Length: 242
Image (cartoon, rainbow, N blue to C red; front, side, top):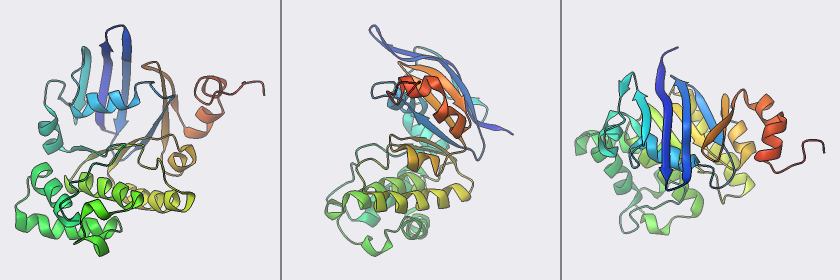
């Protein structure tokens, strides 16, 4: 299966702190990959490297077979790499529809006429169509998370990066969001999802990577990874013999 994303020996340091320490992995087209690890492990920094808001010290990032390591974030977004952010930051004085319209025109490069139709479809898919004309600043946390997702989808991504999108939600809200993400997954978009709400992550992903201190310590099927001694000790903070 062709890789949408290929990361090879990726390194990034801030002084003596390594946030990416020779990380290498491929993501096949259509796969849903979960990434877990302790706070400060380097997960969000990895997303920043993939999207181009951080520049790697060494190593390479290939998207659809093309090295994009030196491309800026806008170029990568136009090529089909989109992301949500851990803390939603909508344009609060603009309507929900206008927020998504920005993603479609600036991210996907659509004309306003083209974008309007796409935005209505995305707002329906993400459960926000009834709030389309409301100010984004009036949304609940769940709705803001959904708006983050909608804006990313409006950029017409082939690779969608989700950064702790379930954080802070109630159990029912989390289940509702998981259903939406599974619906997006079924459309064939490749997903990489960083998440601390592990049961939400496991309801979606086909594969799991564990990162600690900027290093990959595990990569494979979710259930064996979560049951491994190393993950229990390093990520979950449990005694492996307990």
